[in-house]
Image 1 (cartoon, rainbow, N blue to C red):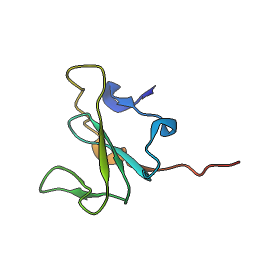
Image 2: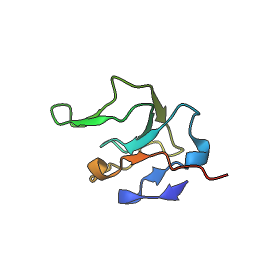
Image 3: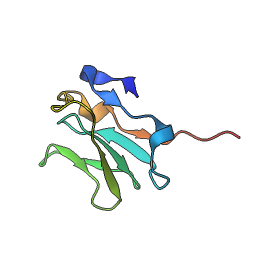
Image 4: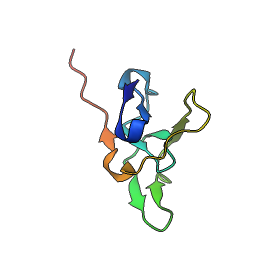
Length: 82
C-alpha cells in the first residue's frame, strides 16, 4: 500500500480482485474496487457504482482519514505487460 491524498492509504493493484477494473477512494477515506467505471453522484456526495461489482477495502486504522479530494482518485486498472 502507498500513501495517497490526505494521508489515506491506497491499495496496490496486485491486491485487486480479478474482476476489478477501477479503484477509487470515497469521501470517508475508504477505497473501493469497481468492475465497471463508477460515476460521481453529487446528490449522494460519493461514487455511484450501482451497475458494477464493488468491494470495500478496510484498513488497519479504526478511523480512516477523510479524503477531501476524493473526486481525483478514480483510476483504471493498469495494463499488464508480460
